[in-house]
Image (cartoon, rainbow over the protein chains, first blue to last red):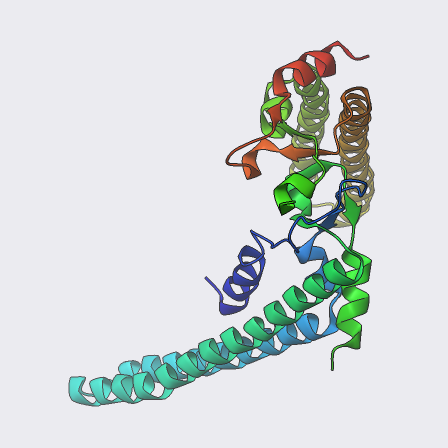
Length: 160
Length: 138
């Protein structure tokens, strides 16, 4: 699976269960339920969009590098280089690419974690400010609740 | 007083939307209409391919190019028509589904109707009754 796809999946999956602010209403208050669609929020959140673009760009650069190395090895093979020379090339290739792949994965994970934290914090803030007792995922709700996507995006816009 | 005692009850119903969507005869019939349109389009494509092959074999490149352009235009229009048919159908199904859900929620005073797939425990399962009404609806 591509790193960027896996990254976005991990962001989405982390929203599978959203917290509540604790149902502590007095008897005369109506329970307030907020509905959030994290995939929609993430698509409209500039930091998330930029993060995804950056990751895709880094992936494309790495892919081009891998392809160039493969081509060089193929050419060496056609030039009938010795098995030892080919193995040395492969080892050099592995030593160059592996750390870069690992760095890209770690960097992608850290960036996605930041997006996830920001979105979760924004949801928490909206829930507290607007006194929601429960926040549910949009995909789980067929009827009822109040859509808080716009409020979450507004809150995210305030985060530096 | 404890928090639980303070909390106002929230009335939650559960609906297995997947069951409704996969077992509905209404939806199946509607998609069969779209499938029939898709089959017509495939037949049209096959006929067009045969016609173009005959023209290619005749060696009349000018006529071939002109007919290719004509056919492409016809096919583009047919594909757009089919896509629109699918979109319209989805809209009709969604409206029928949402309207009935709102009606049921109002009748039974449900605050929330949740998709059963997301709920492990609790709530009142309304799938069967909803499904029967969904199928009876015009």
